Image (cartoon, rainbow, N blue to C red; front, side, top):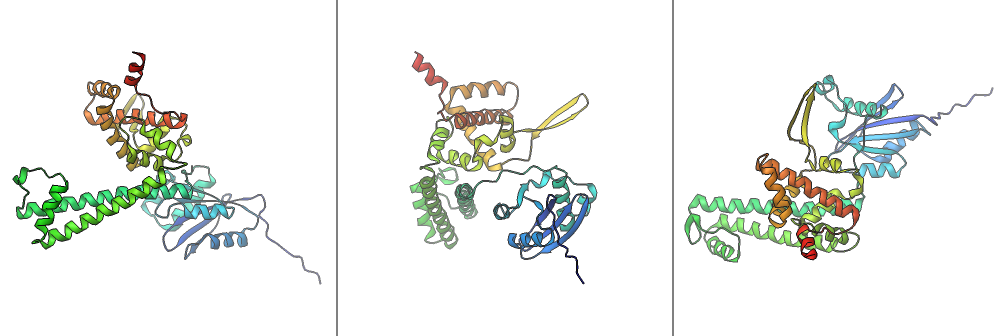
Length: 360
C-alpha cells in the first residue's frame, strides 16, 4: 500500500517573529497573517536555536524578526542577520500599545505585540552601527564614565575635609583647584587620616585610568578612517578633540540623517509640541534623544559664544526674546548645523571674522 508523503513548505509566506529579550531567556512569538502560531520560551537565548526552530516548524519561509533596544546592544541582530533572518531593533517607546497591555504587561504580551506591529508595518528600526564603530563608541563612553567617577571622588574628598574642618592654607574660601600644590597638601594630610588616604588613592587610580583610556582614544581616532572627520569637527569654534570624539562615536554617519530636524531630534534638541485645533503649545525639549550628545553640544555651545563673535551676536539676539537656557539650546542647534555641514561636505569650517580679515 502506497502512502502519500507530506512535507511542510512555507515558500513565499512571510513569517513575523517578535522577540522579548532578557538576559537569561527570550520569549518568542510567531505570527503568520492574522494567525498567531505559537509563543515559546527560549532559555538560554541563542540565535542558532531560534533559527533551528523556525527552519523546523516553518521551512522555506520569509522570516522577519524584531526586538526592542536595550541592555543587549546589537549582537543578536548581527547574528540573526548573518543567518539570513531579516532583523530590526526598535525603540521601546515606538511600539504601539493598548491601555490593557500597559495595565497587564508580561513577556508573552510584549512578544506578541512586537510581532503584530511588525506585521502591520508600524515599526521602523533604529540605526545599527558596525561592530568596529560600536567599539569606538564604547571606548569614548568609557572615558566619560571614568571622568564622572573621578569627579565623584573629588566631591567626596571635599565633603570629608568640610566634615572635619580641614582646609588648605587660606581656609574654607581658599582655592580648591586640583593642581599639584593642592594634591601635595592632600597627600600630607592623608598621612594622619586613613579615610582621606583611601579616597586619595581612589582619586589617583581614576586619574591613571583616565590617562590610559585617553591615550587609547587618541591612538584610535588620530588615524584613518577617523582622523579627517576629527579635524573637520575641531575646525568649528567651541569644539575640541574630546567633544569631536564623542560626536564622531555617537553620530557615526552624518549621511543617515536626511535633514537638520532629524539630527536635532536624535540629539534631543527638539521641543515637545501639543497642538489641538487652533491652539499650539511648545513645551520643554523632548526627553528622547542621545543624552551624551545633547550634553556635549550644550557645553560646546557655551564655549562657542566666547570664541566666535558670530555666535556671541546670535546669543545676544536670542537673549532679548528668551532666557539664557532656552537661548543656549538655540546656539546648540546652530552648532549642530555647522557639524552637519562640515562633516557632509568634507570642508573645514571658515570663521566669519577670518573671512573679513582676508578681504581686508
